[in-house]
Length: 469
Image (cartoon, rainbow, N blue to C red):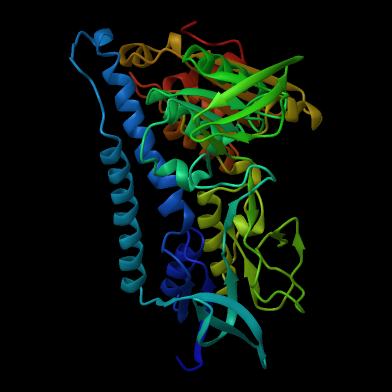
């Protein structure tokens, strides 16, 4: 490959990178995408998508064991783990192939290799492309977007070994179902795996060093999730301190201090889910004005790094580490490069979702953070037990919570736990993005019967007007 000139080169083909490349091509920019592994990135191949396929299977398994609640009976209910895993890989493969089709359709040139900054040629950026350590060629571009994502954080003593200690990759392709499992870390990744394996019949223990699980969520929602998981049979240890790990032939033992007690734990497998680190290595950032802070590239509101012509988006650019944030940043960044007027993303308008059972979703400020910011608040709560559709579905466990500014009526935050709340949170996201107040939300007509009616009732409840509780 000789030096090839482009208007824009995107390094990384995950949900931020490939979306940025497609949007750039739509805007008439000659665009290239450099990807070292699989189109779609971690999200599509080893994260968001295949885990949802696994979680769907686990939900079906749970339902099959509770058919009596709906008047059905089935004998000898069982699952084929290999087929469950195979389906999740097929789903990922199908969508990865689809990304390739979209890039081709939009005339984005795709290079198979690892891209890195390699100096300048006048006002243009040079990028080297290598494959398996061997040089492939050099690209030249007016602008470069770095979208190399992140990887799992590895703690000393918890290094994944492919057998006893798993990262998310091993946890997604088990060859046999462990009878017992320890999940270290209770963020979204840890809790989703805990939920999957518990629903599939494993004995699950979750260990969290902080004082509560799902620490980024509203404290009330975290407490309800904790209660729900314990009811399902999980063991949850918070404020925990881990002792040294001892590996056996086919199990792992350790001591965990929590709640003033020492718990001796022996499990078949351990999943380490203790955060992520940005993929900043070997990108050619040395000698540039790009600043790296705790493994993430620092950017401004439009994803500019400070180095002329170089931008960074997605997980590489720091929290929140969410695929939809990466995609939105990719579009915004490209449109800014193309000279369009863009609105910087407000992090408080980015929804967070955890696809456990029950599901959890949120946007904006928690009640505690709203008070810390000096707001006088009005809080509304509506439980699923008061919602007809939730009861009819057999999903009465849940809560919708709203937080309003008592003086202006601004919706400061919304927090939900229960069936399908990850599909419902967007209603509150639109409300925040559109700067709606309690007045507009009260006047909004919600369809009946739907679980979404609980969203309306939670607004009314903040102003002492809930109707069904």
